Image 1 (tube, rainbow, N blue to C red):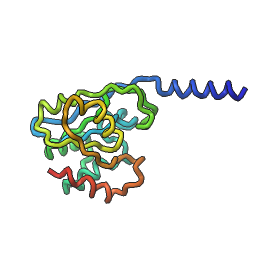
Image 2 (image 1 turned 180 degrees about the vertical axis):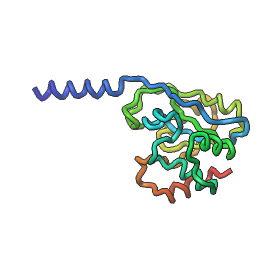
Image 3 (image 1 turned 180 degrees about the horizontal axis):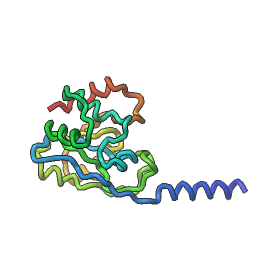
Image 4 (image 1 turned 90 degrees about the vertical axis):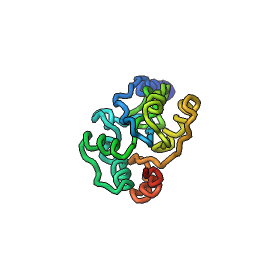
Length: 177
């Protein structure tokens, strides 16, 4: 009986990750974007809100505002304007995948985004990964196509509790344009 229960639990776990999710958010960039920040895949909250780093506990907007010495943008329109004003493009490495909730460690069967779309339209000088997973995925799927190096920055995700807001800002200051 115990073996049967374990097998049923495994089947339930497999079903959790069997749904392919397609990235629902368009990249933010324009012909003046000099820096590209790549995440891995939008969290559940970002997918629901249809915008990058939409989870209220994600520190991306606080970090990027501190680096640029500006107020934290609040609305989606303010956030878009903020990025474009500072020459920052934002997107994710993954176009679609199987994922459980927002867990990067559960990501399976990745189809990458076409990053060259941004690189051909904007004078990107440097690409940054927001965390280890986006760095690994970029190196695996995108670097062989783009041949553009990427710098790994610590994740702004609330799951990265090892980094305080102050420590994140110090690490992210290198993106200052």
